[in-house]
Length: 188
Length: 173
Image 1 (spheres, chains in turn green, orange):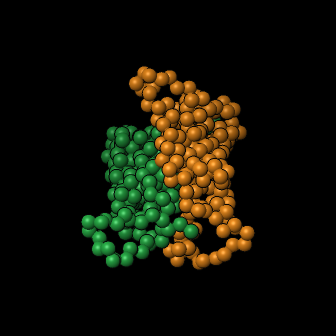
Image 2 (cartoon, chains in turn green, purple):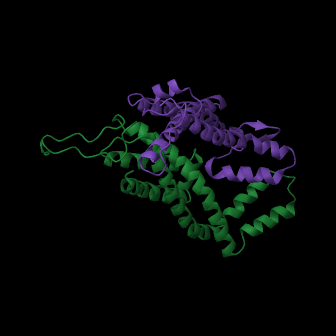
Image 3 (cartoon, chains in turn red, cyan):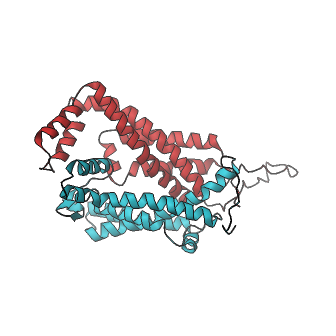
């Protein structure tokens, strides 16, 4: 597998997805069916298909999406920590969101809800731990969404049949030169 | 579509089918738990889906007096995902043939995009049925590419030397 090409495409798309998802208002786009994450997978596929001399399969699109999602989750988590502390001062952080959610359940005892709110609003160490735990959930969700996006991107952008290699350029290629060996993309 | 072994397709279907079914069932599980006094479990489920769905109660199915953990459109997508991984092999092959898959991917996503974006322009008024149906169509497409990609992975990994080459009895290849 062309891991270098996958790494480059996944890095570019993963960083873009992570940054966009971590930003306070732009991150809400993920509420529309993980749109940034699926879009990140599609972007990674576009970059990879464009650079690959060999036909890219749907399976490789999944692997590409997996790598993109992992990078996006790491970048999102890294950006979320300073953004969380910046927003906490404005009173629009995770404790307020959880309070709003708990208000929908009148049978949750008020003291429990208050304890949870106090925990979320607690010290910096607890906040960072909770953000890292949220990062693990993001790792799973982004990986899945980017895998779907990666496979969809291959379906959209890859027009070559499975196993197809680069088209020989009559102007540049020497007629006697043997064709390059495909990495492993040829179909069975 | 690249040739896929029957054995690899069956295994991909099992894996993706179980995962997608669990994802879909988690949405109505939240109101069920809430109605049966398991509020903390319900809160956890609602919180788990909150970053990925707006969860507006008037745009979500309700059960036992509580909204599902996801909106109509996301419920359609998750249900479609579970259905998409179960598409018959022949239909999967036709939809994901190189000449057809682009039209399938874009065509299945267009109703969802129109149903989401046209109301903002005042050109269309979406309903619970249109949100759910357009999500389900996109979900079926996503499920089909997911299961086809998963089924191709073992052959690619075997060629790359990550998986040991094995011959499967009765896999039809």
